[in-house]
Length: 102
Picture 1: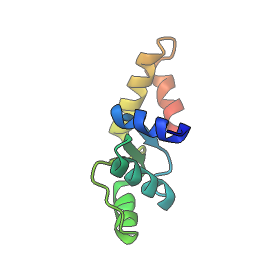
Picture 2 (picture 1 turned 45 degrees about the horizontal axis):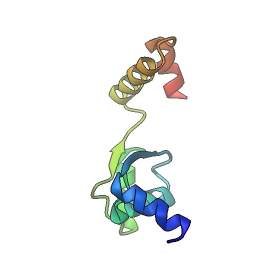
Picture 3 (picture 1 turned 180 degrees about the horizontal axis):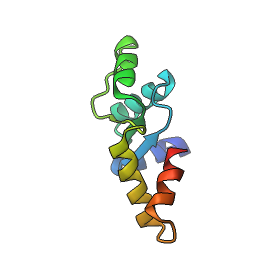
Picture 4 (picture 1 turned 30 degrees about the horizontal axis):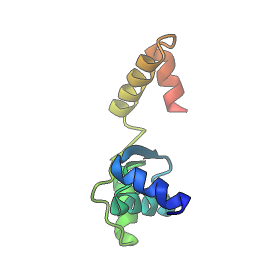
């Protein structure tokens, strides 16, 4: 078994969460869908849900199993900031919000 096949086999045994930035890019949407089809990851794409879904529809990509998160949503920004701050205690939630919005 070659090296890449070993990595794919290992990923299938324990699929991990992967967050794809630029979810409004056709290549990213296709890559996320392919990861689900191959059973190697649990993908989430960042982008406006209506744009991502329209792109998937236009390119005949099945988004079943692909999460879509709008990073500009105030609720998402708050959640990201809290998670970031929790993982780095030296950073306040207010500072984390500014970092997340970048």
